[in-house]
Image (cartoon, rainbow, N blue to C red; front, top):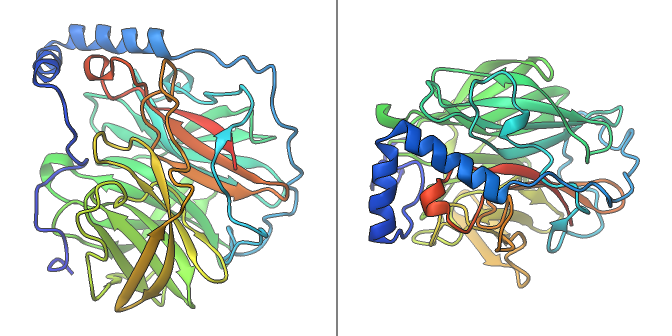
Length: 371
């Protein structure tokens, strides 16, 4: 299955434009651990502010809403798709690097995925990143009673590789996770499906779903037309795979892979796709100018083993950094919407804007938005 993979550079993230002078300063900083840490702390001090928590939406009653064997449901039960996402009061950020207690000097947290258990408890799985550590990233877990106030729990999945994008779902009564693996200098990593031995803390690998020849990231599975599908990309090209069996090894590549070529504004998944009766709503990162700058929404209108068609929604981007100063002022590259009976409750992440070229990219934090 390697001959359908992208034939270009070995990168984890798409390239983005950096001023040569700023780039030179960053390279000098990177050679000095002390200077690098000072720059990171300046970024945190300038942009990261504790939430006011003076206004927040009334929590929805989700008890029993997600008690089926398939969570989320396919198709979703909401009457309409979410539109533009906005902050949930002034509760953000709800999780930052400072909340992590068991992975050394943590730099940032990112890539949040939600899960609601049958008793209405909220769970969140996310990447924990620590620069200059091996592995540099693991999967963490947090809990919440209302979806707005979160308490960090612990690291729940660690391997010898960088892990991120912990896509969590339940199928046929079993809990599954598909984290993104990044082998860095070792070359491209495959996609491993994990099943919970004990949710939410213990996970065991059960299948190798794809084994690409070059790096593609953020495998996002969903059900469509009675089979499993997944989207995955590299920030320039988008790929699709399918399988009749979730736990089957070697999912089949789409006949037209890449299904989208040379679209840096929308070719890397940025969250869980939502399946409706007549289309799939997919979220993609905009990597044209900066890695994961915003999220665009696309409606997939045709998806078969040999055809793929999508169109950008008119209200896209649906998640956009606000600018200025703040935890999400410069980039937002993840959204995970869950219908709570009243609206869409979403986990998002964000990174700083002003001065990020000098203060570093490792300032991601997590917030809650509403759709």
